[in-house]
Image 1: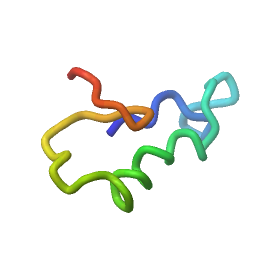
Image 2: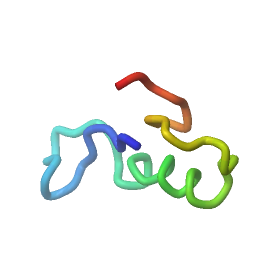
Image 3: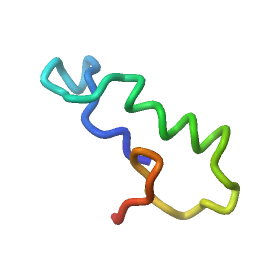
Length: 50
């Protein structure tokens, strides 16, 4: 799961995404996504290539 470039101490003020946006997919995967969605790379609740 990729949170993207997030406004944190590490990401800095120039990052375009809020911590809430960065955490959304991780929370979704842990609580709502199908358990069959394993072995994939995710961002914004969508599978992305790696």
